[in-house]
Image 1 (tube, helix red, strand yellow):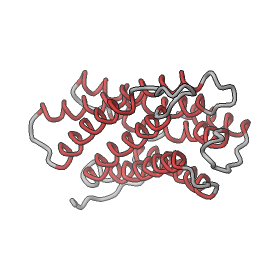
Image 2 (spheres, helix red, strand yellow; image 1 turned 180 degrees about the vertical axis):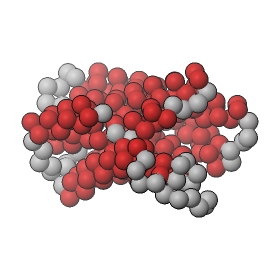
Image 3 (cartoon, helix red, strand yellow; image 1 turned 30 degrees about the vertical axis):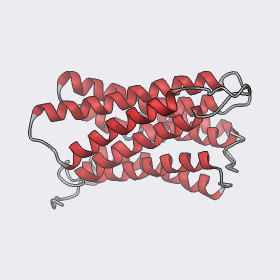
Image 4 (cartoon, one colour; image 1 turned 120 degrees about the vertical axis):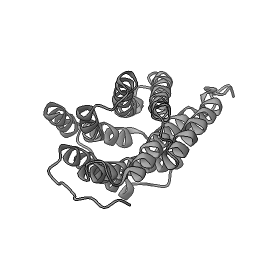
Length: 244
């Protein structure tokens, strides 16, 4: 790993550290209330991966993007995959008549595996050509776009149930994916990642963390005993969003 002086005052360090702290705290709260549900375990894995992603992003930014690049790129892909697997698991099931709810879990899982594997390989063995950079950016954009399609599918399948936590989950995960789609669309258009957009990306987890906490609290099938004040969650999200 390349040695580089660490700059604590870099804005990217601050934003990604705040996002990491929010998700690691959320993971700690969820883990203490977990009751053994498999889908809740997928949620915990996605939250923890995002927390580690924030730490690697802060380290990467603090070294002026010299060190921790491999760790950040790997966790960037794994973070997206973790959320997409969670969404696919929510669509994987059968209705009362025995029909499968959606065909997305099979075809979607294969598409995610192919794109994610390609991104991981290109991250481990980067080619010194402009085309490889464009392919990696396009790959991230495709994963974010596919994730938003899954969010729409999950929302449509859960909105008919009044007590469902689907709307909180869709808003939270959708916020993460929407920002990624915007970031990588801009990067693909101008063939570079905008530093301001990259720095702001670190704060998105802190904004959506209250929504995911509400989703975990209200989802009766996830078996996470978590106390969350709805008023406090809304106020926290509004305050952080205003700061951003």
